[in-house]
Length: 601
Image (cartoon, rainbow, N blue to C red; front, side, top):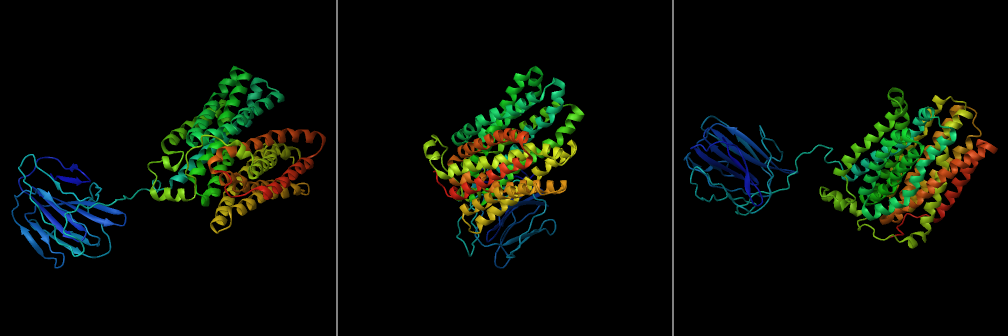
């Protein structure tokens, strides 16, 4: 059998082949430019190794042929043999490879039994050898390798390298960073793989959040809950959610986004799975479990913001955040679509068991593939790391939060106030729209549920469109400050305009269209205020989002309660007028005090 070796930096190993050495053994050294071919003959088998340089490195091929009885060295200029050895029994003890920069081709041809020819050409095209074997990595190192047989006494015999017009006559082993052809998913940018994992986390986040809004109907019948109890259960989520907004940002900035987001997903997934058990034990246990779920989901946004501030350069910031936040919207669509099916076929507990178990799959992938920053990823390519570090933060985790400095900055308060104004209108539309469709547009519950999905789909689409527009404007040279103000102004004034049109429409179709357009323009905020935390303070992106999102959650809680109070004494037009007023206030504050420049370091 043929015996070959892999010649590496400092060793000579990984032998190919098995069996005993045959008595007839010889080598053929073919040399031309950077092309080297070594053929070792054992018994009735020829083992030939050919090294070919390609654009990505070197490719090794192997071929086998009949027993040859000559060792041929070819002159690189005349293509004639310059040395021939007919001693087929003489063993070879030293192999030499030589490398130069000129590209040539070696074409092996098998003639007939007992003869062999090898021709060299300077054709620029690249080829392959038949029956490729294992691919060796060949590294450049000025090393000579010796192989000594256990069966025969092989003495050291030097084989002089053939002269090359473009290189010295040194004995050199070829080394190159050989890059094997890899599937596209292995060459996919790592930073965008992190973005997709965050997208999946936010998809699960809203799936687990909205399933209660569907499951609460059969649950209330089974446990005889009244409306007040149902409202208490729905609101218990926000107890924990509010608690960990700022804490999640502090933890992410101090300990890294990977740890905090992973903790959040596994925490809320376990809480989701335990919800049916808690409901059967008693109402206090259910309220506690829903609050626990809010604790887990409360850290998600600050941790994600911390991660992307380190992984994503400024030129890709808007579209990456838009993609992640669209996971929330699609999570609501998925939860609202599949929950009724699961409840109908398997009962209401199946919703919590199935949705919660998906978190374990995500967590296993997260532990293996995610890192808090590019500096911690040992497999990240140098090119991608250079790209990321050219437009992203690369400092050590935060140890002390400078609260006085943070709260003294006007752009920070612009974020907090604008987030409050934005979420007031958003939460009202998403919370009260089924009631509006049913009471005002006279849709039945099935139609109301169907149209409730439409705003989420519209937001998912327009969030990504807005992200690409924002990044394109930045790449064209428009300042980040101008881009953030433009995108957030659309996110404020667009909903304000379409809400004012609701009082003038006369058909349900036009009302639904106005709602969809309102939510679609609202999604441009993902490229406005939601991207601004990383602009003004990338090291404190988690804390900043925790601060502003706390105000946003409070707006949702107060706005939802205030809407019920307004409807008892007024009309839907009054509800929309309050939202429009807050949208206009947010627009003024944002354009006066926000900035896209870094103000915290």
